[in-house]
Image (cartoon, rainbow, N blue to C red):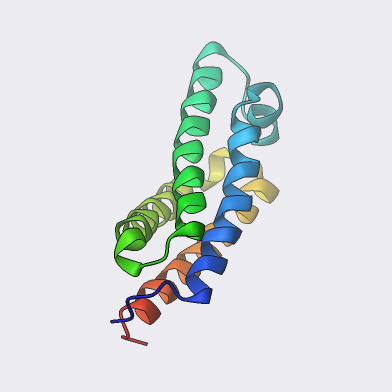
Length: 130
């Protein structure tokens, strides 16, 4: 197992930080985000959008800390948490695919799969499995 944080790990955290920051901002502006997903804006969807924005803010902050980490043990749990979040997001995205606008749904699924692959690669490389 490599003790230092590899470049691929820092790069993955950087990519995730940028994507997460964009989604954090978008979900904190439900008037834009909710219609973009093809949903009707209501008090319920507004509250849900802000809640999802808070979730993205937390994961975005963890990626920022991951960029500056020096040892693998400092970020290992973050990588595992990201994988759990991304896989569950993929499952729920597939289950509720027909609810969302087709273009947005496909984009989110592709983005989620790409991030799953990146974080899985990070875990495998850092643990010297791959």
